Every structure is written in structure tokens, then in C-alpha cells.
Amino acid sequence: MTVLCVNQRPVASNNTPAVLVYVLYGLGYFFVVPVLAGLIIAYVKLDERDPVMESHYRFQIRTFWIGLLYISIATPLCLVLIGFPLMIWWFIWSMMRIVIGGLRALEHRPIVNPKSWMFG
Image (cartoon, one colour):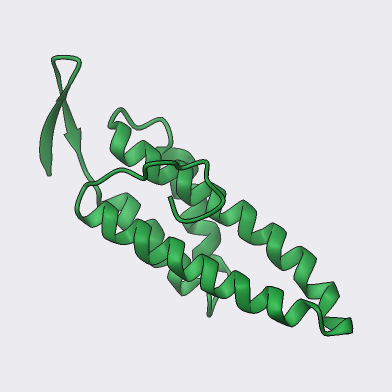
């Protein structure tokens, strides 16, 4: 745990919950429950005083909801074969967000644009 000064007040920075959420999202490719647990952790930790970690939680929450949108659109479109490329896009898109976000969280670097639909 490192200590940062934000507005001349020491702020304890703990990147463990943010990294844990990325790991849970990665497990989400195999199980549903870890993704939901990760989403809950991200929402609970969203009001973190550390702006770096707050950017990660916002990014994680958006990753979940945008990913759910992609899957919701792609699944019925698989009946007419158009959904399969969308599913492949979702997989690549979500994997990139998880890996890039996880690496930045480990290095205690912020997500530059957590509201982006791309990779932050």
C-alpha cells in the first residue's frame, strides 16, 4: 500500500480491489458469478478517494454494461449468423479492456478516459 497526497491530504492507495475485479472479470468467461461479484465490488469501491483507482472502477462498471449490451445484441443475431462476428468482437474488446486495465491498475496508473467505449 502506498500513500499519495491529494490536495495536501494523505490518501492510502490500495490497488488490490481493482486488480481483483479485473481477475473476476477474466473468470467471467467461464462462470457468471465472478463477473457479478466484480461488478458489486466496483460499485462499492466507486467512491474511492484515490482518483486513480476511481477511474478503474468507472472503467470496470462501463466494461460490464457495454459488454452486456454487445452480448444482448449479438446473441439473437447469431440465429442469422451476423451475431458470430459481434461475439468475436466482444471477446477481443473485453479481453483488451481487462488486460490493459489490469496492467494499469498494477502499475497504479489511471485509466485516461474511463467513459470511453474503447480501451481507456
